[in-house]
Image (cartoon, rainbow, N blue to C red; front, side, top):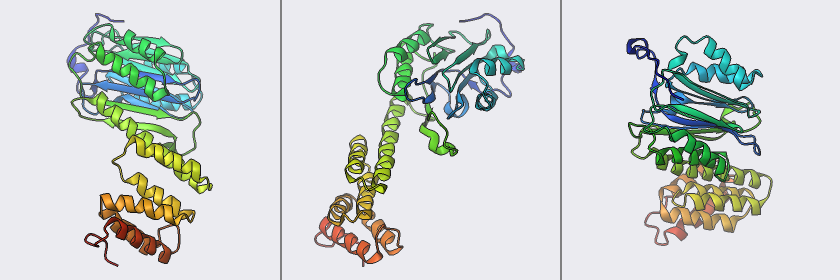
Length: 332
């Protein structure tokens, strides 16, 4: 969808973020997750374009963007209005609507999208079951159809499928200016009342020569931390097998991050698995002695999940095993 209408630049630029970009808003019919993903040749595009709230919906506001569409769109959908009704209401009160491109999906998967007649070519959108893809200032008019096809045919969870749509856009030439930033925001089906816990993905690449590659890497890191949290939950219930499996998955995703074996050891300590905990601590301390310092400090502060004397003994045994000659071992 493109248009020939034009609005003079002075009326647009002073108070309007120029987030020319491509994006997708979508709901997963199985998990109920809702999300928005975006890429642009514009600094920190996610801070303007991406909005989502569990139980409400997701919004992408771009072109000559008005972030108010995000804030008010989420509020109206949270109050029970559908995505189509919400977008229609906001457009009706916007005298600059022809320079906007906005898409919304609500918690029931209803979608709405607007590409103003004065958005910069190539510009357009395509909708499907529970999703909308939209783009402006693209190199080619094949960008958004390629995004739609990629999302429909991709496998995996909502985040993976939205990433596939972004990658398809880039293969078609993407933003005519190139690339700079990207973002991914995915929220759960049902709100917990704690918005920060409702986000399964909340990642932004503000400035990078290959933002989609970096976004993909950060998705892997966030998945790893998700497995860590699931592992902690399992250990809290006494399920060592499940907890260990979750921690192993976290470590396989980001093998160089010592957070995972360290906190796995702490979790084992909480269940009295002293030998296993000591071995895991030893592995960490051998790779970076500063973690041994942290372990001792936590033990002496009473922050390990066992009595202080036991925690200090485990730390000392692990440190000696990691550094048999005591060269880098923490002082008692």
